[in-house]
Image (cartoon, rainbow over all chains, first blue to last red; front, side, top):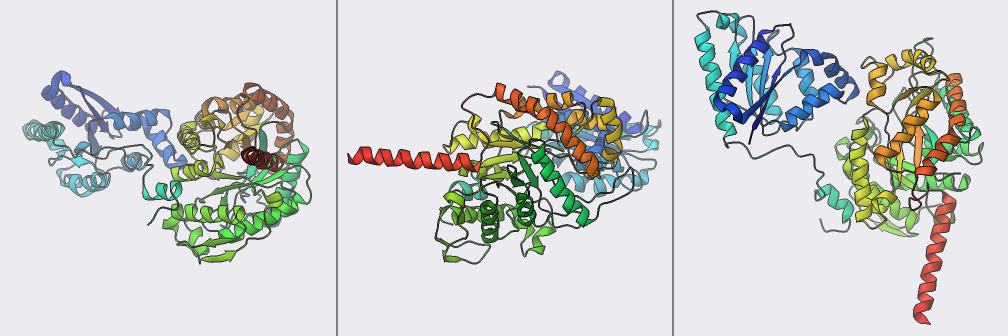
Length: 204
Length: 374
């Protein structure tokens, strides 16, 4: 069965380094899993207006709703964001704020970020990891951070090995070490509150 | 009256008119609601509903008082809520107030009950906002008994127990006001509606139809599960929102500043996108007819269509013009909905029809009993 991976890049500039990093990660995933994986890369920048609209209206317009559907169907998610002012940009947070609270439950996630200096690197663990813990995802232990240094000739070896390590971890999680939990949209007819309607005289 | 009912629902919001900067006083808005209600009757509409709000910026905290005043000045109009809070109102007082209104209006009252959508209201009435669903269930179970049983012994979690209590006045003709349950996200509310064979109302204004389809389908299936009829026979009411002018472009030009600055969705998506994605129609009477008729394709044949037309600072004069235009398309809407409606889908509920149904049931049971003893 084909493994479905969605890679989200929230780079805000054209030709962003976040998208470049997402490309490196998905290429490594493709090499590891070959024909068994289908990877879709989604850029948040073209969805910027719909993301903000959704935070006002409370519903996702069609293109954004399609991305939500892609995530719902995904077996794993790769997330890449630039780090601005010590954290992810507001658009990145607004995207997850507009997402169904439970949609990503139990999904393995590879967290990655880019920044103007290596001093931003711990934002992966201080800013991104809590968000994805809240969303009840399963982030892989290795976060991938790329600074300008990493794109230079002397840095690429280190970046490549971090990407490979994180991808190995993601593939290992996908191989069956997951939580067994997943998002369900079903209405539970046997919850306490439902039973108090359908069987009002039941003993407490 | 045709098999479907049409009406206006409002939340009575005090919103600045963005084209003039003026804002109605509480007195002006309350009087405007009365004017709008009388106009709904004049144009041939069936229902006028008001949403309970206790926040400043809205005027209808006391719906039964407002409705009694309107009932005194109308003859056919059914007075309803959109919604009345089942969570924060004492069910004993709800039973008394709406039974009183039912008598004074000669049966022209029904209720859409819901949780209410703001947490801050709960403590104003001594309730815990984290108990919204539980309050909804317990309070409605009590309200039902207060209307259906002459003498009630009752004990629950959220209010003092009742011993040998009789809620007065008893419902008119022994038939309580029809109840709809309104919700846009809580399946328990749809379950209550299904369990009791009551109506289900989806406000159907601010979100895409898919949100409402899920809950309406759930309600229809559960209605059948509890033995009240087929899923298609469940009693469904819908909201809707329009702004009409004879020419589509005139409607768009006139409504745009209200849309762009509206509470709830203003400063968000464009009018064009919002129209494409939600039930809002801004355009010609023909466009309103087409979009409204399509609701039955998504949600199934239904019993009541309500429209929101007086929000976002629209002045009273404009609202009354909207009602004139609605009056012109109502005969078409009635005829088209009736034409597509299967014979076994029930008509919209009225007091007279419910009394007749009760009498028929009593007669049938008596005949059966006679048959057994004979």
